[in-house]
Image 1 (tube, rainbow, N blue to C red):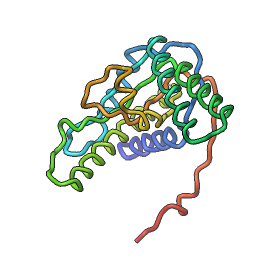
Image 2 (spheres, helix red, strand yellow):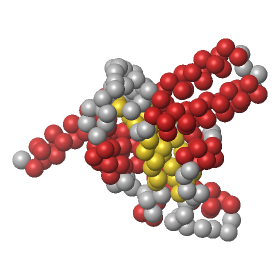
Image 3 (cartoon, rainbow, N blue to C red):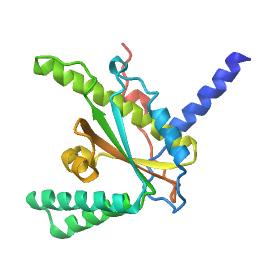
Amino acid sequence: MCDQMHQTNATLLFNIIKNRRSIRRYNNKPVPQELILRLLEAAMWAPSAHNRQPWRFAVLTQTTDKDRLAQAMGARLRVDRTADGDDPDDIERDVARSYARLTGAPVIIIIGTSLIDMDRYPDPQRSRNEWTMATQSTAMAAQNLLLLAHAGGLGACWVCAPLFVPELVKEVLALPDDWEPQGLITLGYPAQERTKPREPVQSKVIFL
């Protein structure tokens, strides 16, 4: 009986993993704070290097905060793409798309890493490895959040843009100095359905 229950749970989890998609459009239904806290608790049960739990989260639900962040990131995007010599019309479409995605989400969760509790080394190689371990830990926490959101009927999308402008995000949101934004998750009740294929497992795996 116990084995059968484990098999059922494993099948349910596999289907949750397999059916999760990046959802970028949401309806206006607010996400209850207790549900957001549950997602964050799930995130914090991810494995982490040395069990130092280096993840950090900033939750934005107010329109003014989301607008301020979207405006600042859009302005930097415009500057960077202009410096690259990109077509002005393409730039403005990109900026508008970015702004709509951020402000159209009921919830934005900034995903950050802190090295404050990680080990410190005198040489750059081990220091870099420590940073990588903290970043990997944070990514696993974000995946926990994404999976539970999907299991709970929410839509979510990982956005890597803060990785390109971490200091800007910290300044706009007045985040602590030791936080290093890695990305953000837009979150809400989905207003779209998406399907996306994956390559066959055999194409990415070698058994030795």
